[in-house]
Image (cartoon, rainbow, N blue to C red; front, top):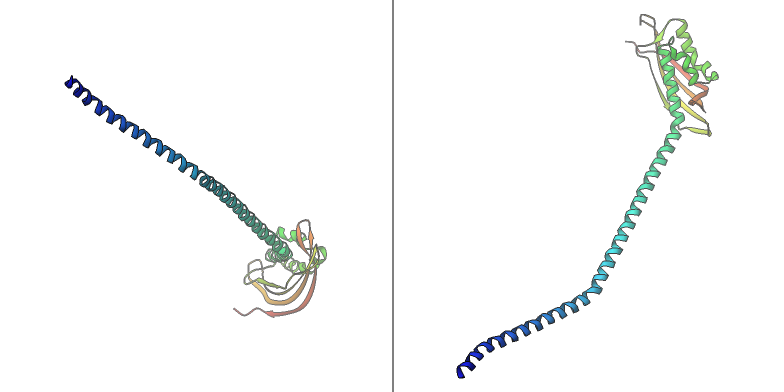
Length: 223
C-alpha cells in the first residue's frame, strides 16, 4: 500500500506541476492578448489620424501639381501670344525686306521670270518707281553683278491702319552694271532715304506707295 501511494505521488506530482505550468501559460497568453488588444485599441485613433493626414497630403500634392501645370500652361500661352504679337508686328517689315530682295534679284537677272512676278510684291503705282532700273538694264542687255549689293536700315514701324503700315528707311545700293560678257559698264553707289507704305493683300504685305527722299550718288571705289 505504501509503495502504491509513493508510485501514485510520483505520477501525480509531475502532472500537477504540468497542469500548473499550463494554466500559468494560458493565463500569460491571455494577458498578452489582452494587452495587445488594448494597445491596438489605443493605436487605432493614431492610425486613423495618420491615414487622414496622408490623404490630406495627397490631396495637397495633387492641388499643387494642378496649380503648377496651370501656371506652366499659362506661361506657355503668354509666350506664344507674345511671339505671335511680335511676329504680326514685324510682318510688314518682313514684307518690305522680301519685296526689296525680290527687286534686287530682278536687277541681277532682268530678263528672267522674276521680272513679271514683281506685281506680287509691288502695287502698280510703286512699280513705276522701282522698275525703271530693271527696264534700263533689260533694254541695254545688262544686269547687276560684281560688287552689287544693298543694305536697308528701317525705322520703327508705324501702323496707320490694321492693314496699312509705314516704314522709313535709310538705304545704300551699289549698282555694278555688267554686259553679257560680265564686263563692267558702269558702277555707282546710291545713298537715299525712302518712305514705304505697305498694304496687306491676299498674298501678304506688299509695297503700295513709295516716297523718294534725299538721294546721293557717287562712283564705286576704284578696284
